[in-house]
Length: 246
Image (cartoon, rainbow, N blue to C red):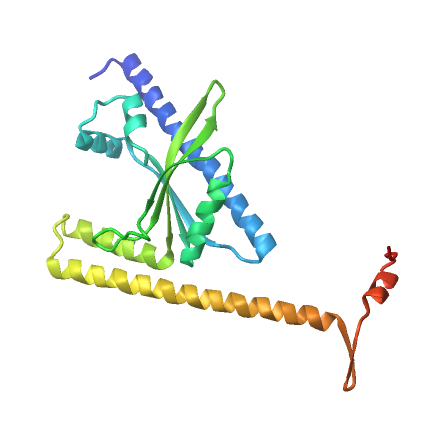
């Protein structure tokens, strides 16, 4: 057992280390909220259904380091483990996933360190998601730390499948019966087909909405009286609005 003073110092170091990741998540969550609000305001649409963030526990970090066979030190942990802090972003449509990824790439203070696209190339068990390792600056009172967080972006269908697979995985202590593995794979294919169908519907609805907006704009340019329609001259619009012709 460590002496009390030494243990207190060790605890403070661990706490400070984890705070870096906690604050990185806080900063990233703020960015996501801003993107959601801006997108809703200008596009009358929100590509993000919900988000969930988490920090790995010291015990979980230690197990992962042992599994990797790495030396146990704070710098070693920072170097070897990139998913201490993580956020899952759930969307309605596949196109939203890549739209969000593009918005994150456009953030000048974020660095995309790694991309794993399990949508274009699903895992053998059927798992689909877009994984990003993002480096984000954290400004402390006495220093700046560049902290990595893992961001998983997936559709609702992908998230439902992953949640079910995770539950089955641990229920059977990682030894899943072969017939369940096959059914899980088939369920993944069904979820992917549903995502593609919903994407087509979403695109078609968007096109109809855009067409209706164009029709409404044309209606605004006409006056309807009884069975007659009169176009509103541009010159009259400028005259009534006080805009002089040049």
